[in-house]
Length: 416
Image 1 (cartoon, rainbow, N blue to C red):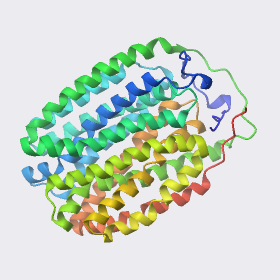
Image 2: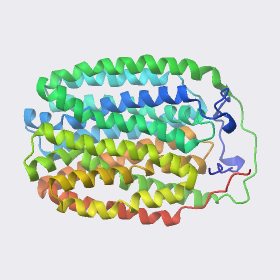
Image 3: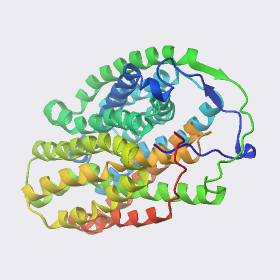
Image 4: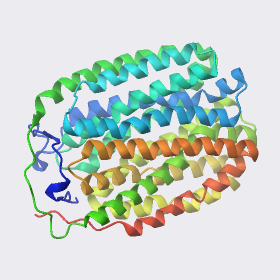
């Protein structure tokens, strides 16, 4: 396990210092599994609802005669709201934690789903997507902090458990859309507001657990570890990590937003069948996201980052030229490999700037994913001017950005 980097006193603000949870904060005590399970299940519910947006794109496209650029704008509306606010939320909660903000933020998702189910105009669809994005912005920074608090020192494992819930939630969207939304129409989206209500109840209970652990105090001045990277190297490393997460997220976003259309256009499959193929890819993403964290704890996060991004390159290059069965197999391999990097990237960033967990989590959950959303809108415009197949040929080269991992510093090893 990598030891968190100690930074100079002048870089510190007055963050919230979370008191140790009995049996959770001390590495010897092990993770607080009940808390991790609760926050992971909440992540599952949160991302299940979010994934519905991309899953109903074919319905919205046919109903309102939207082009691919307009589809990309819906993704942008959702991602932009989430990306813009997540670092702001994280920065604020670093100074003053808000344990009940998770439940309150989930209410935005609740109303966003209701609005999306009743939307009759394109502008209203954009507003509904933005409300769901707002719920995501509030949810991720503080829930990532809770996952780390409950890790018992196994930071990669805890982050993977947290990511596992979100990844499986994302993969469930296409299945639920195929089983419920496609047969029953746009109005059936309102049924999923009950999931948001359940998430509100769980997150309120987690907030009650979290609130007593918060203890505000000023951080004492400390000296930098002699082996810690310099402030300049920390900044460079953070930029590299954002670029790596961007390459991964843009590729996943391209499949999530347009894979259904790609399969329909190239192989002539039905919408429901295409959604099942998308589910297979997203489920592989979930499994890979879970494996990445423990592997990073065991072998080092830098090596996992190298393998997970560059290792996907041969398979992404082959995908545009494969048949239907080959595409399904390659999507599974790509999902397993490329998603294993997320936990390692986020924990690596947290260890570079250990006094800003909320802001760093917000930046990497928000800005990097938001850039992916902007990229999805650009890819939609590119697809309108060329073809979906051409888009996938271009995106196949995105994992090559993994070569930037050579600029990541070596973090100090923990003392035993």
